[in-house]
Length: 299
Image (cartoon, rainbow, N blue to C red; front, side):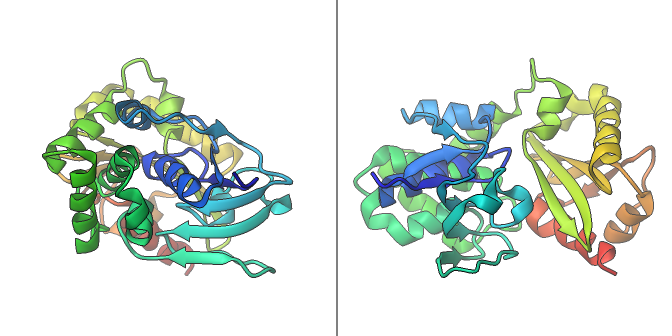
């Protein structure tokens, strides 16, 4: 095994974690995570008998291969003194390197799809690997409901499901999402920070979190607590802090935010009230939430 770590972004989601595991196994590297895994990922790894990777919150002095991210604000601490040897991602490119390195990006719905597309021959011999990559696709595409979903994602998912022995892909996807939607016992900070990413938009630091739920009414009693936490995050670190509560079944998102309401209203052509608004059809942070905000904040 080569002394190179494959690692996803801070506050790892399922696609980030399983991509690191799969790439590390295929490339004979070491898998790592930049933070604790969430309930959804825990459910998936246990289902397919896969161990949780080593937690590596600081990568200073390490050789690392990045998956599912490429922006500096999302890389584990110590990145500026690490050697990045490769990147495999499905997000927009905001990366530079003084040294030549492997860089592969495609506009698919999940990094898991790219890995499966590149290395399917090796994956066919490993049902557990196929299972976790299928899970990564279903998680990131919100069971194919996200606008980031492509026909390639669906075809790749079908092949992975056959290898992993999953009969009904959609039912399995809903099972995954329900596992991640269980917020019982979770603190407000855990809900907000569980899938929270930082972005640089027009020189301003913006923080955006997302949680996907089959029934967003379970959040109603703590919405004000979430906004209070977002206010603290804004005061300490961000120009704006946003939380998207995504409604899987009805396909839309309630945005809770701290910052200038005019930015939200202008970016999405909506009215806000008490730092809240609901946007029908908004499912993807990457494709539907970040680009309109970037456009407004870069003007």
